[in-house]
Image 1 (tube, rainbow, N blue to C red):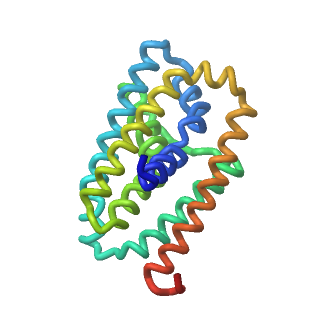
Image 2: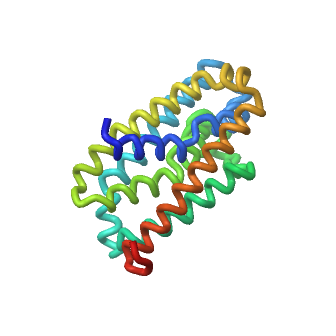
Length: 208
C-alpha cells in the first residue's frame, strides 16, 4: 500500500477521532431509542460526506481563487492541528449550541447535522486536511484519488464506531477512551509541528 495513502488515512482517522466522539454522541442521543439513534448516525455520515465532497472537489480552486500559497496553508493548518491536539491532550470540552426552535421541530435531523456532522465529523481539522493535501501535490487528480478512499474509510470507521458506541463505551470505559484520545493527540501534535516546518520551508523562510 502506498506510503502517502497510509499517511493520509492515519491523519484522517486521528483528526476525525471516532473514539473521542463517543461520549458526546451518547450524550446527544441519550433520550432516543435505538431506531432513532441509528437514523441519526446515517444522516450525520451522509451530511458529513456531502460537506467533505464539496471541499475535496473545490478545495484547490478555493485556494487558487484567494491566491493562498500552499506554504501559508500548511502553517495555518499546522496551527489548527496543534490546537486540536492540545484539546485532545488536555480534554477541553467540545462546546456546541443547538437552537431550541430547530431542536423542537426535528431533533434527530438537526442533531445529525449539527453538531455531529458539522463540526464533529466534518470539522475544521478534517477540512484543513483536505485543503492541505489537495494543494500539496503537483497533480490535483492524484491528490483527490488518494484522499477519496481515505475519507470513505474514515467515514466507514466513524459509522461502525457510532453504531457500536454503547458497547465500546462499556468495554473501554471512561479511562480507556481518555487514554486513547491522549495518544492520538500526541501523534497529531507532532504532525502539526512538521506541517508548520514544511510551510516555512515552502515559503523560503527557513532552509530545508
